[in-house]
Each structure stands twice: as structure tokens, then as C-alpha cells.
Image (tube, rainbow, N blue to C red; front, side, top):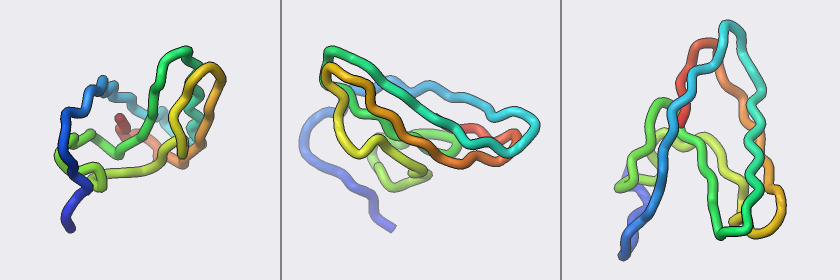
Length: 80
């Protein structure tokens, strides 16, 4: 499967989290005065293949107001 690629540079920060001892419903909320976009990936993020490990995203950029999204995560699973 080929991923989504494109011209230009992607600027990103990736943070890895590990779910606790039980399955969970994870909610991510962003609130920023800057143009930000959040996506979640299982295990790791690959900037050259945006489809690889993809789980969820907010659906639109955040500017000047909170934006949330939710996804399910298995016990002990890592996500970025």
C-alpha cells in the first residue's frame, strides 16, 4: 500500500504514549491560537507514509478553539 506523500516539508513533533492495563477510549483535545493538526498512529509515525499505522485525526486544523477526537486503544498498546 502506498502512502500519502506530497511536495514540501512536513513540520511535526511526535510523542509516544502507552495505554494502561485495560482497553481504553482515548480522547485528544487541542486548543491553540496557531494552525495545528493532530493525528494518531499505532506504535509510530512515518512522515513519508501517512497511511502507515494511522488510527484517527481531528478532521480539521485547530485555530483559536478546542478540537477533539476519540479512538479505542488496547491494553498496553503504544500510540504516537
